[in-house]
Every structure is written in C-alpha cells, then in structure tokens.
Length: 116
Length: 113
Image (cartoon, rainbow over all chains, first blue to last red; front, side, top):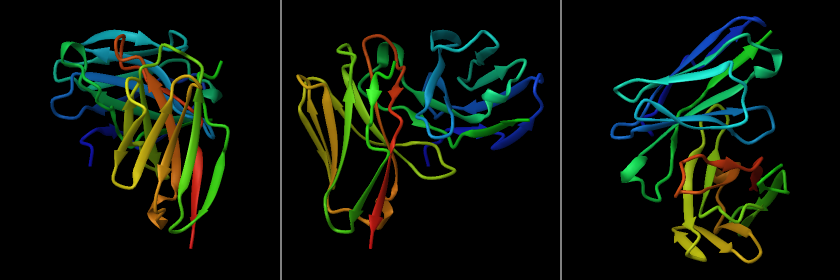
C-alpha cells in the first residue's frame, strides 16, 4: 500500500470532451508527477508539480494541464479529448525540492481512460 | 528518441533459476536508475534503485548492476519465484534537476513452474 490514490479507476469519454483525473499523494510527499502509459509502452512523463507550481513538462500539448493543491493532491485535466488519449494515467508522488534524496516515486493504481 | 531501452519484450525463466533483465540507456546525464515491477491493473511498484556512483546494489533476491561505460544496467532475481511474474520497467532520471523519470517499454517476465 503506497498511500497514493487515484480516482476514478476507469472512465469512458467521447472524443472532444474534457476530463479531470485526481490524485492524492502519499503523506509527507510534496511532489506529484503524472504519466501516460499507452498499451505496450512504458509510462511517459506528462508533467510534475512541486509545491503547487509546475516543475517540468514532457512532450505533451497544452490541452494537458494540471493543478496541485495546498495539501499536495493534484488534478490532471485533458481538453478536447482525442482517440489517442486512451491510456492508463498514472500519478506518482515523491519528496522533492531541498529535501530531495535518491528516493523513489510511489505510484497510484492509475486511471484507465477510454476515448470513443 | 528512446533514452531508456529494454530490448527484450518478454523473458521466460524456470522457477528457482536466475532471471536477468537488461536495460540500456543513451543519456549520460542520468544519475539515478530504478527498476519498477507492475502487475496488471496496478500501478508500478518500486523494486530497487542504484545511484550512478555505484556499480552494484543488492536487496534480498534482487541485485542491480550498473556499467556506466557501457550505459547498461541489469536486474538479477535469484532464485526466481512464481510471484515474480510481472512486467519490469527500467527507469532513469537526473536527480539534480527534477524527479522526471524516463521509463523503458518494459519486459514481461514469466516464471515457469
């Protein structure tokens, strides 16, 4: 049990719609990263939030956006959904910033998004 | 541009034998390497890591070896057990910048009875 929880676990949306995915980070962790895992691929980094600020972004278009809240939980928003957005979306929490050490990130179970 | 490569999509090993999963990387800035294990319908679970200043790290049945000159790392599991059947992801990051983790595509390990 990592303490990282994601909701919902499964979601079906129609092309063009918008979706919000949620993540509660592990207690004591101040950094949340979001990853997209397409079928047969490894997780791909979308972006990271540290203390409510975006702290790095992968190669994803602006319609992928996020938020981090004062309690370090986070949201991933995707606008104008496309069929290729169908994937497992993973959230990972870690301890970043000045307290960063060589520690691993803990992942939630993921949200399976299907766009039809 | 795949910075972390796992060239074997799958591997089958007899129970009790050694499982060796390989990984290559191209970015010489990586300074921290991780292995994650993933079961179906679950998120990746951290298994073991190694800093670039070391060449070996051992934790129980799991040992990771790092060859910086070859930009290669491997995960050894011995003895292999049925519960080790899963997808294993090799990953890397540059800890002096951020916690962005670059993953390989994974290797599916099957432990045979």
